[in-house]
Length: 328
Length: 234
Image (cartoon, rainbow over all chains, first blue to last red; front, side, top):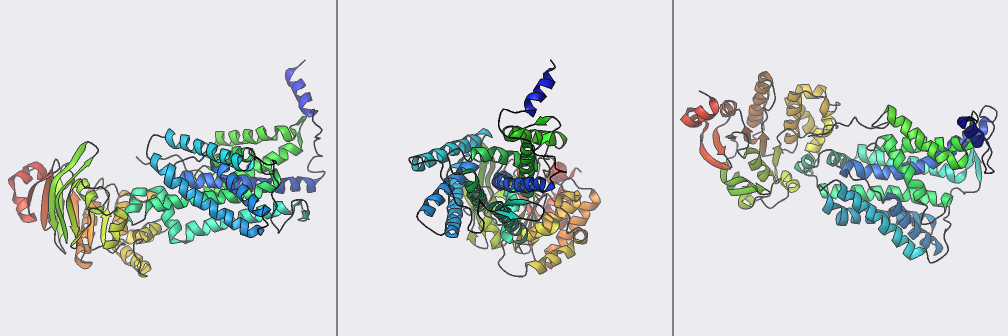
């Protein structure tokens, strides 16, 4: 028997109980709901990706610990919420803590390896991954895992909201709103403040930045702080959906990296767009059958990565990446 | 205004400067001459704080600056236009100029941008363009303009003629003279093009393998046998 045919048969009747939905034209409401929900998940990938990009473009360091740093501070937030602290107070305290940790990490372990061999910062951030994951396990894993984290008071994770063309949960809508606010805040910071201009200048040419009177060390520290804060927003928003567990961020970070690469690795808007594309593809692939092939939720993840590879084949520097022109 | 006293400096094991001493008086254009690798750029890097000297001292307006980091020196009124321009290549002309005024706390920065652009009309036309879209000459103009934005009392210029066509070089040197005259900016000029440098400078130093070997007024240097044979080629 034809191997491809048998594979197609296997894929069209997966062992799991998931069934492919009716095609989009028969149920446009479901299709748009899936797309908008994908955008919400994608914005969370995008937020973590944004953190990765902010660090990469200023220091050429890939922070593998991005997700775990966010996980750690979100767990701290969980503890505060258990102590009946107001949700929004927790939100901003977690952000502040994340910023402090980001700055501290840059100052203490990243700066010494800067300018050295390329692999050194890679090893250091991988080490940080283990440190933050173990620390989280040490403090919180004695109790029951996973732990539930509340959605924002403005939108329940269980109630649906009708947008007219799509139905998503209130929390998903809040994720989209908060992602837009974060992007807007960063845009204003980078493009309309003297500090933001100095940060961009530092990212491009640190030595010339010093000659302008910019304290380069401070800018790098600030970049890490900002990145950790954006990551923390992602952590807080994803926790109500995926629950808080030691592996929660592993399910996010892979797609966040994919999103960052898709966007071009040095473009903040690119990271967000990349995240959203991957979120949508993942959702659509898990809902619909394509010809005889139905990927289902299990295979939707590799499909999303397949799309990434396809796009990179056409645009090797990502959607918004600069052509790799290096200063000598 | 500037007093460099017996400064030595090295990059790792390679010694770049050996007991270099020089002085720049207020309002002057002083040329620092020498062949490739003689230590001209290193001297400027020590003055602006990018390179920490291993010995000796640098005094600017009577205050020692050789232990200060580069980012705290520019605010004192000392601006370094580095070799190879070192622009923020993806930022616009306007953004580069704004950054030039980063160290200033006063509110006249906006007005100064227009004043600087008046020296370089071509840049005014390209104010919204990224720096890397400019021609070599325009980039050099932007680098000088960015340096001026700090309202420096002393401007260090490193090889403003590098890689530019003769006509463009003449234009830029004309502007440098104008700046010296109208802004009362003191200038320390590093150049490989010795004839050109001596045509606008009042005083000059010659560096060879990290040491000052000769110093005199520009007129004397132009007549000097060694300078003529080694650098002017006649």
